[in-house]
Amino acid sequence: MVSLLVSVVGIVLLTILFADMFYNNTVRLTQDELKVYMNTLASDSFSPDEEAAKAYAEQLGGCRVTFLSTDGTVIADSQIDASSAENHADRQEVEDALAGGDGFAVRKSATLRKSMIYYCRLFDGEDGQFLVRLSVSASSEFAVFTDALPTVVWFLFIDILICLLFTWIATSFILRPVEKLTREAATAGSKEVKTEYSELQPLAKMMTQMNAEINEKVEKMKEDHRLEKLVLNSMEHGIVIFRSASDVLLINKTAQRLLDYDLNDPIKCFETDIEIAEILAAREAASVYRKIEGRDYSLRFTFNEKTSVLLITDVTESMAAARSKNDFIANVTHEMNTPLTSIRGFAELIGAGSLPPEKTQHAAKTIIKQSDRLSDLIRRIINFSAIDSDELPDYELDLTELVHETVSAFEPKIGQRNLSLHIELAQGVKVMSRRERLIEIVNNLVSNAIRYNKDGGALYVTLEGGEVPVLTVRDTGVGISEENRERIFDRFYTVDKSHNGSGGGFGLGLAIVKKLCRKAGWKLSVDSKLGEGTAFSIIFEHKQ
Image 1 (cartoon, rainbow, N blue to C red):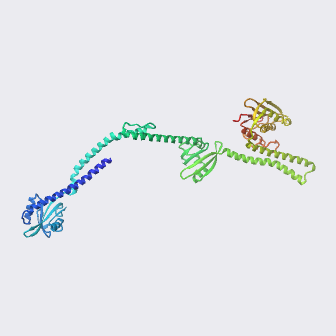
Image 2 (cartoon, helix red, strand yellow):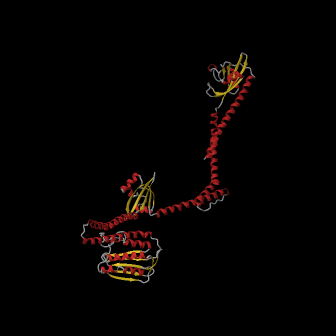
Image 3 (spheres, rainbow, N blue to C red):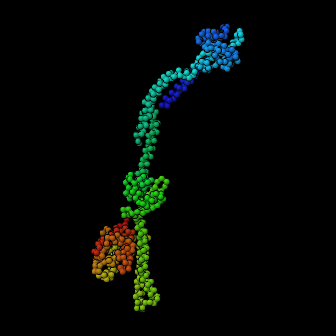
């Protein structure tokens, strides 16, 4: 197309150039002819009248002959009436002839209304000097160009045919191999690009190298995308990048599940939750807490100029820890307040002398008892807190001997409750631990079995040997309800809500047992039926 346009423009420009050259050449030849004609006149003697003008015009083949006086007045003219002609003194050819003997000009005739070529010469006559002017009609440059147009059109037609022919040749024999090479390069993938044309071998080699680089980059992008998707979908946290509730740019599986999100649907809570909708409208970073599927989650919203980000974090444990901390403080305060109130009350009575002498001894015993209870509470709290920081090494212990020794120490309390004790211990059972920790565990389990047993009930302590020893302490007491079973290992949690100390428990015993078992890697389980009894079992698995 470009070649065709260039050739067409070239032909048109050349036509204009040649038309101008032809016109100038024609004018020059005509001037020479008029000089020859003028020389013919110069060899004759004639009178400058109308008859002579017409005779010479006929002799010169129709050339216009005009006789003029030196002042520019037309004396005679072969084609017009001299009396109607205007003065020619201002004509260029006349001025040049008067000045130099002859003059030449090309212009449009004011009389004949067409382009003329004029040649004028000064003659000496019998009655004085006069001017002879010869003129012939001439075609303009535009007329010359117009006359050449049919030929130009044929040239253009031939040019178009030639351009189409060369285009077909170029397409068939030059461009088609390149197109074939391009198609092969586009479909080659990681294979080598080949061509049967030696001239295109460097290009094929370059395309092979480019394909290899592109494939490498594509594979890297795919791997990065796969890893990004794997990381996002493996996150415990939910993440959402969005522009609006219905324009979600990215969402991982965790967020999809928690928000109950279906692809191509709006995120429901963004529109139905009033607090979240207000945050999105304000576009200020904020957090809200929601319970989803029975767990607590933090929904943290952050915003930038065009997109918004939602990070969903499971805060169940942290909120439970916060609640546990608050419960711990409240329970410790309550547990310490009870004995302190009793101690302060009796101390004030003694200090004021308000107690009769016979009741002073009872008050002193109560103060001592409550002081011991307070000291025991503090010791248990310290012991519970020290478990995490205890890094002393374990050593091998005879669990059979330790359990028998520890349970035997409870025989007086067992007798007071009129309980029957059944001990069945495998011999020579060894475990890796520390004596004080195992005594703490057995003490707590046995004391709970006595405390929550029925008067006249039974207490069973069994120890199974083997590769994985199992210790079980079972009572026939009140049992534990389903609602309390989930919380019996919480700190300061007791089934007896009175906290009056009548049962002797602070709610730390089972919490200590669970913490010690978790630290050692042992499995602690409970099996209980309300009104029938409870069994605690410890499986002494080897710590990995």
